[in-house]
Image (tube, rainbow, N blue to C red):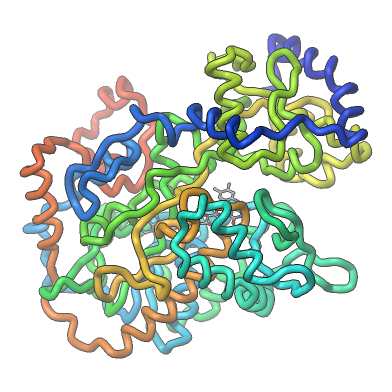
Length: 556
Ligand SMILES: Cc1cc2nc3c(=O)[nH]c(=O)nc-3n(C[C@H](O)[C@H](O)[C@H](O)COP(=O)(O)OP(=O)(O)OC[C@H]3O[C@@H](n4cnc5c(N)ncnc54)[C@H](O)[C@@H]3O)c2cc1C
């Protein structure tokens, strides 16, 4: 849907103030950055700082930890199955390494496990590659150029970005392994953007002191995913892929070690069992929980399933009290709601302006500050721009980019977004975009060590489902790196671990029974079940009219 007349009228204010703002940019006169005090003050508008938005978990290893209601709801929910009804004596599949999740972390883990001689199963909820990895645009950080950069500077940037709370050993591993990861991806055929002489192009990422963000045009994640997915498919003798097959519980043995997972076939709606000598959890993030009703950039499968399964099995959580909201997500047209508008627009000169056409924040503030400033403009100052359905956003003045860098720049530099908006009859080189912060990344997750292992023997973690590497705030480009570094490490160590394991003992879901008991003792009475598997957007009144009566969460 193109902009309706009411929005076109409001847009005139942006057009009126644009020439002066372009002139200011050309003269290098920046809107003032906030002082530390101002930054601290504005953060009260950030969802992480809204106390009513969270509560303490009543059960499990992190009892008393205060995190978002929507995450606690998932953790304080019942299993999809009654453990007593599951026959664990017969496994449907047996393998050395089971990888749960077919995104970047899971697929790179599978490759490295296979290189240790392991037979691997990747079981994934949707299709192989339907994942947040696929959607990443901006790039991947790595100090590959020795000139003026090294893992040392990268380390400082990561911990600075994480508010100095990151787990140092995880950061050290992240930055030291980064150059090798780029080399590995290139050798597998990943087409990063290059200069004519063949050297890899790099850009500045937000909050970094050096230009070390490698990219493949504006489809970096898709290109990385294509690379590792193709490689996994080439090794089909050893790596089997089960699609539309989410895990719903980990299976432990009589010693409390991990021994596989209980799976669900989304086509036949049957549960089945995979027995495995080692398991790597790589289920990604939880944007689809829509914390505090925020829209999200995440794919449909990002429902925090791994957190639930890992927590029930006894693995603790860390840094889940912080969530990253990307400042610029589409708020109109609604069909594209939540979709990420990359920082590169602001980096290329587009201002953020309010209903009066006034710039209200420097566009290079950190993500949490930028998001808070937009929320303050809309919620507190009443200077947001209303959408036809009563939401509010602010303008991202993309046409400024053509004014600053020449006609055609927007179309050439941002082909993905240019085409997306064209479908709605909006030309973003002539008309600004209406945006609002969108839930983007789960900063925290399950606790793991630098070798990918966890408190449960035989159970490894990789990617966004794990916490600690990015402390309280992840910097741009470090997640694509994280999933490859820790995906490879978890896969390698899971493969090694599987080699030495022969007898898996007796399979058990006793931990699930115990969890249910703990819930009852804590007085938690609920019909909720988790993992959620898919978000449910069906309005209640429609659900009431549906003839299928029995649902477990979102799935029949
Ligand atoms: C729009 C967007 C842009 C981004 N841009 C960048 C960027 O430029 N640079 C950067 O560093 N980071 C970026 N990120 C973040 C980064 O892409 C992700 O954090 C990262 O790719 C996560 O990888 P992952 O393998 O851990 O999870 P994912 O890639 O999400 O993969 C998880 C997989 O697990 C599957 N799964 C989920 N639950 C289950 C279950 N119960 N059983 C089996 N399978 C399950 C999912 O379906 C999915 O296939 C971006 C994220 C988004 C959404």
